[in-house]
Every structure is written in structure tokens, then in C-alpha cells.
Length: 194
Image (cartoon, rainbow, N blue to C red; front, side):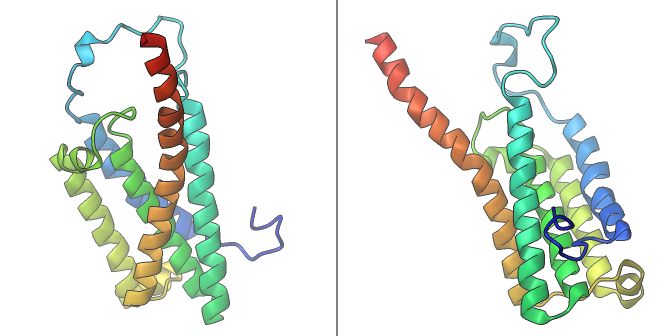
């Protein structure tokens, strides 16, 4: 998308590898040991031929991907324009992308059930994995040798606030359609039972 818009690359290949390292390995393993959801055995089984992406999962993936991509690209453009520093813009984009995906790891714990607090606190290995991932990101941002290797710049407190706001916005953009869909479906369920 950035290329189509005539923008410089928002992430260098080594930064993409960093995001994959930070967001895919340990969080995925931690999700694999996630305890089952309450009441899972009371649900009817899925049909044998049903796709893994059925029940709206592919739409959720697309919406979440577009939201993360849009906020990452917007953060890159804003940081690069405000500072006039392409490396700083890429650093902000890398941080937004990584933090957004780490937030998404908590959302992956459930298919729309349970509170956000329950999703965050219910899996200690995931908390540890996200902590390690954030520590790796911090090291790349603030240890000079790693900064040079990954073409990163240290972020200020204000820039971190922007990173967290952008990552939170991508999560909010994903949650809004779900919340609206539930809200619109609620009156029809009430009418059906009446």
C-alpha cells in the first residue's frame, strides 16, 4: 500500500523479521497451552467438513489485518513527517505493528467470549511471552549495537504514547464492528422470543 501511494518502505526487511520474531514465536506457543474456555463441552461440535475459517473467522482476520495495516502506515507517515527522519518513522511503524499484534494475541484467546480483563489475566504463559517480546523490542530500540543492526531510533515517552494510542486504535477499530453487530442482533433476538 505504501508503494502504491508513492511512499518509502515503512519497514525494512530486517524490521519485518524483528516483528515476526517478537510477535509470532513465544506468544503462539503460549496460546497453544491456553486453558479451554468455560462451557466448551456444552457447545455442539463443528460439522466435519467445516472450514477452519468458517463462522466469520476470515472476516475477523481481514478486518483486523486492515486495521493494523492502516494504523501502522498512518503512524509511519505521521512520525516521518513530524520528525523528518525516515529511521524514526520506521521505528514507530515497527513498534506499532509489534504492539498491535501482541494485543491481538490476547484477543485470540477467545472467539468473542469473556471480558478483556479475563483474556489478559487468564493465561500466565502468554503474559510472560508478551513480556519477553516487549523486552526484545525494548533492547532493539535502546541498545546502540542493536539499534544500528535494525536501523532503529530510540523512542521518547511522547512517541511511546503515540505507539500505544495507534495500537489501541487498531484494536478499537476491530472491536467496533463486532459490538455494533451484537447490538443490532440483540433486538431481533428479543423480538424472536417475544
